[in-house]
Length: 117
Image (cartoon, rainbow, N blue to C red; front, side, top):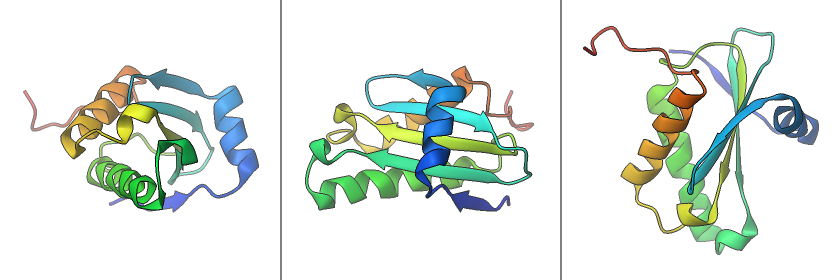
């Protein structure tokens, strides 16, 4: 299991936005950038426009869990920023999971599992 650190500094988020690669759909936007280290760093952004604190925290928890279950399949040494869009507020867990996997696949940051086939 890889160790994931949280992105907390504003300049790290801005660096991922400006110099990283991105993919988006109606629920999520994923930005990633190589960080030069061995561990991954995860940042989650949920706007106050999406709802009250309960709704925003639920979205964050779901994204964090989706990431945790797939962090072994992600390539190492990246900064990953996940931005929740307005449709994420009314989306179910499975829909968010499908969006995350599809976008990560599009960015080629998911390794194919050996058991698949």
